Amino acid sequence: MKTIQAVRGMHDITPDQSGHWSRLEQAVAEVFSSYAYREIRMPLVESTRLFHRSIGEVTDIVEKEMYTFPDRNDESLALRPEGTAGCVRAVIENGLLNTPQKLWYGGPMFRYEKPQKGRYRQFHQIGAEVFGYPDVEVEAEMLLLNQRFWTRLGLDKNVSLQLNNIGDSETRANYKAALVDYLSAHKESLDADSLRRLDLNPMRILDSKNRDTQKLLNDAPQMAGFLSEASLQRVEQLNALLQNQGVKVEHNPRLVRGLDYYNDTVFEWVSNDLGAQGTVCGGGRYDGLVEQLGGKSIPAIGFAMGVERLYLLLEAQAFAALKGSDAPDAYFIVAADPLQSFAFDLAERLRNAKPQFKIMHNLATTSMKSQFKKADKSGARYAFVIGEDEVANASVTVKDLQNGEQAQYAIGDSLDNLLAGLKS
Ligand code: ATP
Ligand code: MG
Image (cartoon, rainbow, N blue to C red; front, side, top):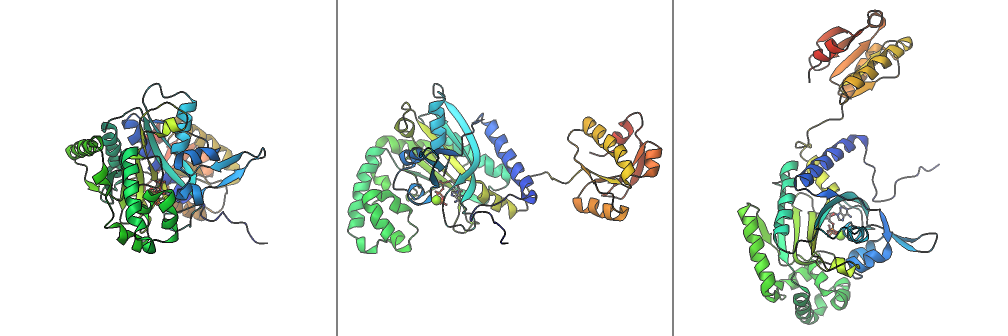
């Protein structure tokens, strides 16, 4: 019989990987907490309409990448392709917008894409959305928070910041018109995708990966020439704040981001070490979205990181910045079945006394030699040996697997001697 495999582009996180995943998530959560961001958890499934209305009809995500299905009541549902729309829905629905909110979330997202390194159909994002701050200080703080991720993860040499300002809706309307004029005069150099976008969403053409289109865009009108006084001022203020904090910035006038809801500041953190999938984090301001989804008019900004891409960067450094290990502290080796009850007693007393201590109790009484081999292979620091002699004397023999030292501890009345003998 043919074995059933995981869905293409969807991956297991194996036990050898999951420890690194948790430590990565833990480090990120700590950084969020140091900026007083609080976690929000949204459902993985939302009404399809939510994404059509927020992300935009003429975007890759909505046009080509969404997993949608009718439920049994014939309502169209979608596996979330990103977190912002659901988060905005949630803050409106839960009445959270009476005060500013700094929120973060994490979890799986789903997009029907062509799977390749750094691009999957189920992938994970950790993102944040901040509501209620109109000025550039929130941009600055968010980018500082991002930068702190990279330092904390040891990736500050691997990623760099690209920034752009895409203006307000008036700017974009004027710019769109100019861009359409320019591109319409060069239709012969546009591919089918870009031609279609020319009518529907011309700014997305700036994002095109097509070489000819890229070349054509070199001489296209630039957004910067269309920015309002207010937007230009924001650019300057943000630059100054970032410069004062030592954040290096590259201005990328082509950066538009793949979703429709952004305005003014947009940014991406990119790496040269991931091939074509170089963006590890992207975000921007989206002041119109809350109102567009039925809430009040409130400024907002957010970002999302691709966890698999971060993981790839960390893996290349053997996870050096993420201290910790899944290896047991103690590996219980038991000489014969009748001694197991004694071993259980000790293991449970030890867990009571030392809750962080990881105890791997080998539950199969194979030969001592084979059990010692397993203990070594597990990476455990100590082998706890329980044989006839140990049980007779209410004791345990502890072998330090790092230096081979061995000692026997009485455990009849208390574990104090044993605990004192274990190095931290
Ligand atoms: P890309 O240009 O790589 O397709 P995007 O603009 O579609 O990215 P966003 O919607 O901004 O991506 O998502 C934020 C981050 O999530 C990306 O920068 C990336 O790190 C990650 N990401 C997006 N799509 C995928 C995917 N299919 N697989 C893995 N990570 C992804
Ligand atoms: Mg994409």
